[in-house]
Length: 132
Image 1 (cartoon, one colour):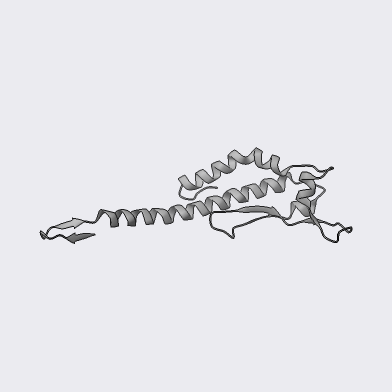
Image 2 (image 1 turned 180 degrees about the horizontal axis):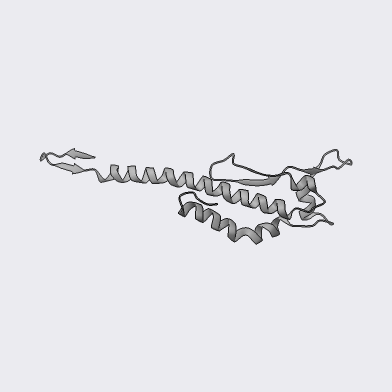
């Protein structure tokens, strides 16, 4: 974008040019980041499904990710155990991770796959969103 100065010469408006370039790059980076987060969270869900205890088929089938907020992915599980004494269910993930007779696997699964999750996100940002 050139503008005319008092002397009649045209001058390049570097600020506007750089702003346009950075805005365009920012939009591309935003899209790549969202795709990379989707891929990384989907990978974690698949690993949690694979590592869920076999006897808890309900738990294994209930893993999900949410993308309600920009730049954030939540991975969780919606299955609950029944607890007639109190009239409400306790999340199976809590029973397995923290119960006296639990079989913790969620933190272990995350820790085992943390580097791969980071690589998926980095790959998505570096390779124009091709993070799979």
